[in-house]
Image (tube, rainbow, N blue to C red):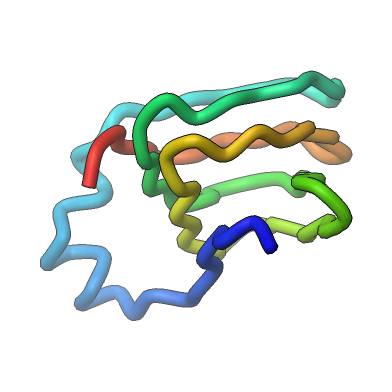
Length: 90
């Protein structure tokens, strides 16, 4: 199990955490391996990606708030261009 957390946040939760002040990262349609050296939290603003970790593949899409755990090794398959707010560290 990958321990990736996907949830929906309310506008109030997004505002309370200050997510809209986090940096923005974008990525076009592509596939690449990724390793998380630190925990990452992100809010997907646009797009869709399948993240494969071990035997598990998760679909992540616009509106999802995602926490990727430190040490996770995975493969990102971006199927629709991604735009996200992100923050490293817990």
